[in-house]
Image (cartoon, rainbow, N blue to C red; front, top):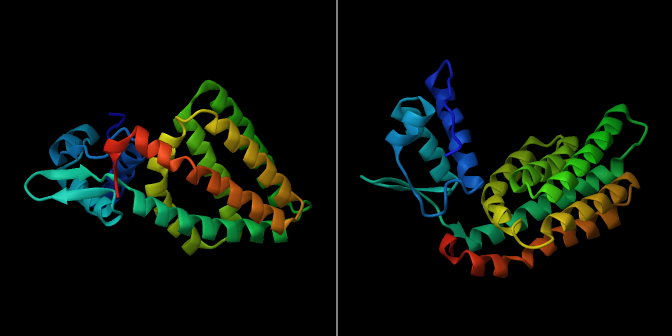
Length: 234
């Protein structure tokens, strides 16, 4: 278990901190789909009482990442193929709209956007290195940072919140996808092309590239389900 103790001045914040820690373990598949989780064991590992763990469990259950089982504890939810497809559709729709908006309004002379450009290029270079080293977790974290960089430019907190929720279900799937051959190299190449379209104020090309970027991932779904059938439910 890659968990460390947490500390916070109030119980409510402890519950959120526990939620963040446990959610990360679920998303990165350190807690496997179908695995039982114990309130008392997690409380001991995180150095808190069982109350914040219980609060975290309830938040994760609302997100459908955990299933609460009376008298037994909680079980990490299996990856729902239906939920993945629904989440992917919502995320694609929102992110394509957001990226097109950024492309439409991109101004290379704007100081903040220059900083974003430099950061985006830095992320891609780090992704390239992570791909070479086979660092799956680092790669996906950088992938999230890349997309988040442009979502933040839209300044729409509702959009950001919805995409965050959708990623919870998608990212478990994506950690499995990263194990397929050449996946990471393909993502890096696609990110470079998307950047070029955005920086050229080319909305149409940005949309086309993102559609391919997301659809390419859909094609890997059947193979991943076959390889890890015990992790999935319809």
